[in-house]
Image (cartoon, rainbow, N blue to C red; front, side, top):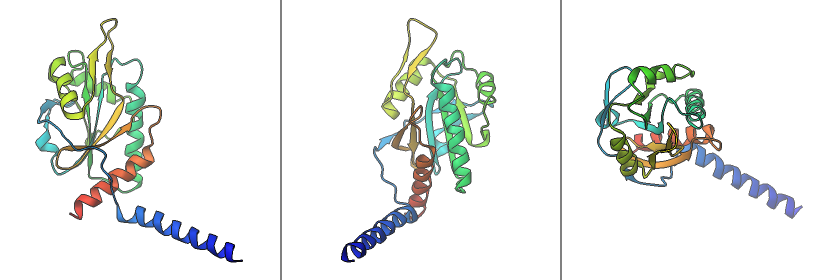
Length: 200
């Protein structure tokens, strides 16, 4: 009988811990990298820069439209994240996809690419309008991320991570954007980060 009561007590404590964690919106940052200032062109031929994103939590990734492997599933995964955020009532966020093949990826090409997905493009900027060297240096400096040209093909080599950036423009966490992507967990983290910043 004593063991049953002890087990029940442990279960109650565990439940309280879980519910408290979910309810207070505690967000734990893994990194604290400052995103370098930028101003690039999106799929609508509009200029988008770091100053436009200040005050908003945003998600960054690196893709290109001719990608034959990871970019389509990564982009699909971000549409799944958008659905989760909508389910959770989270509206105040942005997604920024930086092209790593800017010579090919014109605004028109990026618009056609994102049009293949069920994406809310009112919250999603796909950026181009820079040189390959510029985006390679930007990825390395801001996200500690590798972007290199594959000399044996027309493909680019880049990380498959999603990067969570806080409203001050600092990258605070990264996630697998491909096979092991967890839309539910990332949506919870985004919601927790937004709540945490609102309470500061």
